[in-house]
Image (cartoon, rainbow, N blue to C red; front, side):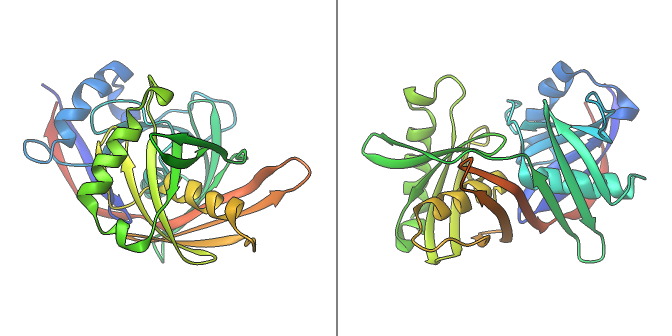
Length: 273
């Protein structure tokens, strides 16, 4: 057994265990192995996932971000997690403007310590693809990880048991095998204000927020709207997230994609793995 220091952090209610793996040097297999234990809300620390800050393994970045879902699976990019890790890094000696990679994608973070807000600049995003699965009309969007978006009425967003059942059914549908997909249910409060509930793959439940899901939801709303906006406000159960982008008509690509929202330290401790 090895003792490690961890920080518990949250971004709009999406909560994470954060470790500085430069100090410990855990292999990816080791991280995958202990993540479910630490993320267990009854027998562990409890979290939606685990973040590890690594030495850079990609050119011209400050560090590498490792993120694993609560079950140890690979989530790809995590928008809320990246904001937390950027805040963690800024207090650990990194500049407030940072670059990092998740797999082979490079991101930029701008940390505002005073307001505990972090902006993450994403790579370009391709427009949604329309598909229908089990009578659900969906828009499929890749924002560093797999997402689908379904437009629903506001009352449906309150039926959480139903959302979990539907989200699970879509997440495990054969069309997304073997990886599966995150499933976002959105309602337009106005043309650039969105209410969102996300069923997250790897957590296998609704979470209080999903950053990459907020991006996917804003892009879905933009693609379906009669009036287009460069900025969207996303209301999630854990708070508010902001999304902005520039849509390039010539290339049909979303550029200068930015996710902004809160990041906060909750507590730190020592745990054995």
